[in-house]
Length: 370
Image (tube, rainbow, N blue to C red; front, side, top):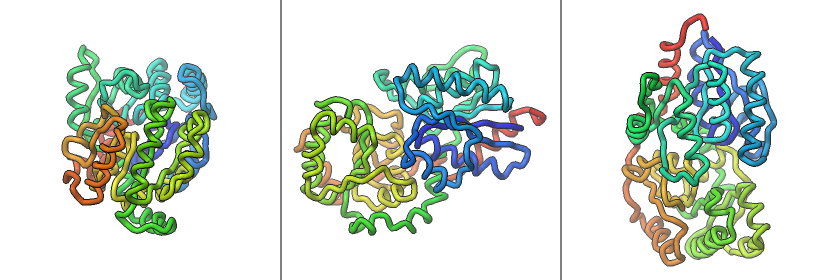
C-alpha cells in the first residue's frame, strides 16, 4: 500500500515526522514524502528533515515563494505528474498551509482519497489565508483527523450530506514529535550556549501578516519588545518575512539597538524546543507554539484576536492579546515572571500516540491491495 504525504513548510515537517515514525512499524505500507518547496530556506527546511529523522522526499518541487495564487497553481501542476507516477492509495496532508490545500485538491481531482491531519480547526477569521485553506481542505478530504474537541464541533456544524468524510479524534501529532525528541532537545543546551539561565528570558516568534507586514503592526511589535527587554533578556529567532519587513519599514536599526535583545537566525527544531521549554514566557503569533507551550506548561501570550486552537486558551497556558499597549504588555510579562500566570492542563489525547492511532485507523480502512 503506497501512501504519499505532501509537505511544504516547517509545521508540516513536525507533524509528518510523527506519521512517518508510526507507519514505519507497518511493513505493508510504503510511506513516502513529497515536498512542494514552500519553505526553501535551509534553516526552515533541510535541518528539520535531519533532526526529525525524516527520510528524504521522493520528490522536491522547488516551488519557493510567490503570490498565493501562483504558488498554488505551480504546486498543482507539479503534484499531478507525481501522483500519476506513484499511484498512491492515499494522500495525506497536514495543517493549513498552501501545500496542504494543493495536495488535497490535486489528489481529489484525480480521484485519490485524501486524509487531512489537524482537521476541523477554525479561527473564524476569514482574513487569515490559513482559515480558507482549512475550510477547503476539510471539504476535499475523505478522512479527517482532529486534535481537539472544538475541531469535532466545527466539523459537525459545517459538514453535511450523504458523502460526509469519516472523522476521528486522534490527538495532536505535533505533541508526538515533541515527546519523542524532548530528551534530545535538552542535550543541545541551546539556552545555556546563549549565556542564559532557565526561566529567566522571554522567547518571541512573530511572522503573521497582521503583525509584521504593515508599518503600524511592526511598530507595535518593536514597542512591545522595548518593554519586554526592560524586564529580562529576550530571544527573537527571526523569520525571513519579519526580517524583510523590518528593513522595508526602516525599523531594523531601532530593533537592533535594544539592549537585552538577542536576534537569532531561525532555529532548528531541537534548539527551538530547548529554548521554549526553558523560557519564562513565550510571545508568539504561531499556531504550533500555542500547542507546544500548553503541553510544556509554559505561559504563552499570542498576539492575535482569534485562535484556531481554543483548547490552548480554555484549558492550556495560552492567552490571546491583540498587539497591546506598552502598559498591558508590561503587566502580562510581570505576571509570567512572578508565576502569576494561569495554571494549564494537557488536553485529551495529547499523549504522544496520535500518529500511531492515525496509522492504525487508515490501515484498517484502506483496501489491502491498494
